[in-house]
Image (cartoon, rainbow, N blue to C red; front, side, top):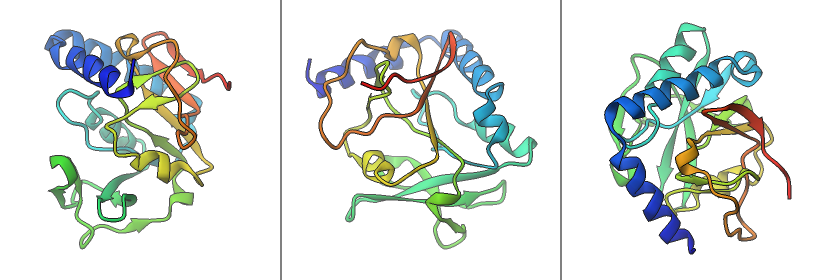
Length: 189
């Protein structure tokens, strides 16, 4: 299957999840993440503000703040096809950005160098055991990850897992996946 067909198919399944089932999966994924050495040892965590059909990142943000961690979130720059991360706290101003996703207001939030991010939670729609992912098709994270050397992780329900994603030369896999079964290191091809 082509990436766009896989993306559409899995996105449709995610949007059809009943609220109770979605919340149950979110609690399980977050529990595994929170109990991981990656989360426990990270001081600065990068994550997006999730859309309604994605796994709720507000749970992660709140837990990180409770544990004294710094949260940074991406702002998208479509003209340059880049992401830059900004520090977010409970008083930060957010705005609807690219594709209507909540993003930090760069005028009121501190920009953070990518090398200061200890753990980056990378969004996606479809994943394989090698850590390759199909995102929303813009390639923003693949470009951001080309020189990112810290840990990367994605939250992925078994609904989102397939055996192998068709990979292109610019695709960059995440280091870890959190599924209903737990955290595991992705397999390198």
